[in-house]
Length: 145
Image (cartoon, rainbow, N blue to C red; front, side):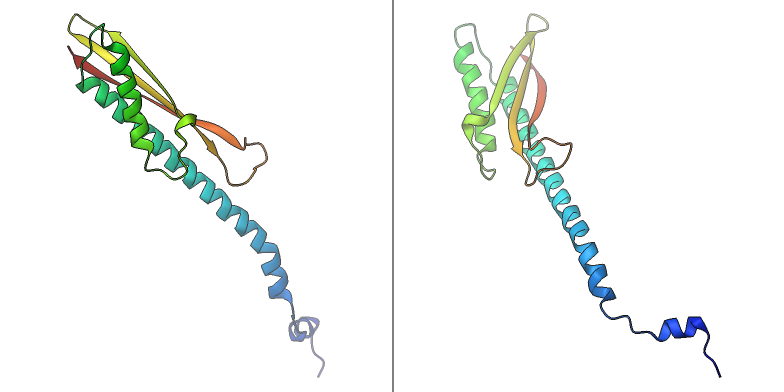
């Protein structure tokens, strides 16, 4: 009895096929894992920066100022935002940029806008993406005088 060509192909040993498949798949999986880690770190940085802006705006909306105390009030708002970021890893306060502005709406009502910006550096260089970019968030709250 003669064996068919498909039976002969099936009986041939397949040594090393799994190792070749593993060698092809590992770099792709490794890149995917690094991409997920970078995306997660960027999202965490955005949450930290947005929370710092919210804390600064909350402080500015709950603490009033006069024309004489505006500069010290503004520095307190900036300090509150910086204090909120102190718990994050590798935080450098000199790289944090916080801008505070107020807009009067009516005689007893004004808006406080706090914008925080912090640079984020990725783990690895990705083609078409910058190695470092700024994460920024702005929060506006109202206050009665």
